[in-house]
Length: 262
Image (cartoon, rainbow, N blue to C red):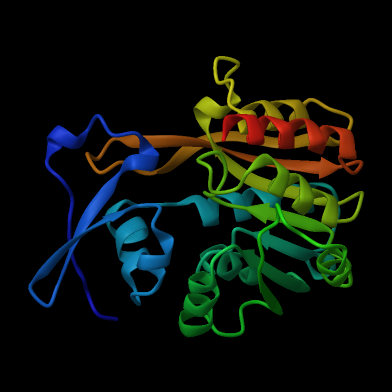
């Protein structure tokens, strides 16, 4: 696959927050500044996402979260051949590719941008049994009923939580679409589990982990990737056993907070 001319900004940019990081891409003698979270632009260029995050920045999260889920399934005497997974925030299919390796039965991808599905179909055709482009803060009953026909019993989401990519309401919707007595596996930046972080998503995750809605099975701190300065960025991989759906009143609470914050 074609190699791209990627340059990181000077070290003077090391004050940038993780969700403010950017790089320069030179094509046809033109230099373009692209934010790390401008996924529509990144996905539209074959191989750019992999070169940026996996080759240059050594991202390890899809493999880490998949291995954590695999271990939990084995420890609890469940079977991969019975796993029907909703890969939420599926992007260009890197997590889906790892999940396929462990032999799951069905895999349904979801993302909010069409460029993600296009990139998946281009680079990893056949990975997903279905790939939806939907805003989970705006789901209709028809949307929910269609997704429920897959009888999903596991939810994964990798490297998409907590920076505004996936609002709390959207995560709750995804959580409620998988069956009770199912698996939930995700990763999250380490600071989001600290009580000093009062963001809506951070509080939601802490509330869920220690709630009647799910039991925590696995919690491990690991190196998610490097920053543009080469500094390790640490996340937690989390695997939980879902016990109950999240009630509407909790969803409404976070929905109101998001409206207030906006």
